[in-house]
Length: 225
Image 1 (cartoon, helix red, strand yellow):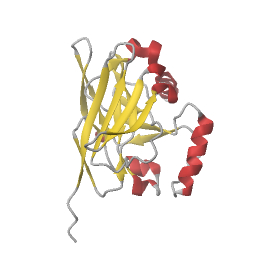
Image 2: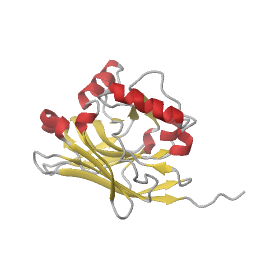
Image 3: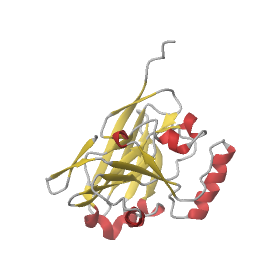
Image 4: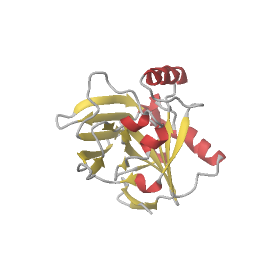
């Protein structure tokens, strides 16, 4: 079982044994825009979902606090996201990066998301402490050693944490150990997502505080046989 540990602004830490990992998808707040994106993906061969938004069960061990992600080939990339962590004492909010196999994605989105880790930051905020200005929190991602900005938006572009907490409650999944990743925002055109490094940051413009993560993408050795 994967165990995650988070440092909180008050100097305390929270440790959570992950029992359930869920990845939201097609989770933009403007669902008409999401449907247009699905049509774009369909032209690339990526199968669309039957309903939106979606929620994919992921193997819990793939929730990782790591600085290296090892991959099978060059066509993998991250996605800037936020994560909800349900603990015994409440709900935490942190930064996450859903690393996805783009070659496998054309065969099944859920398969592609189970091929690599969901990288989770090691700092977190209590959701209650930022709930009154969630939409203003910034969400950014940079790629490569030159830190090219590839994603730049706010949490207001995505379905909010309380939406997903409601979904979890309806299904009896709002229990300690559940981790939910939010879905992502649009990537900038002309920036190569297939980079050897990903960095994600959530920022609070009210306090100036940030939560970030970064990891290198390393290819595995060629198979023998």
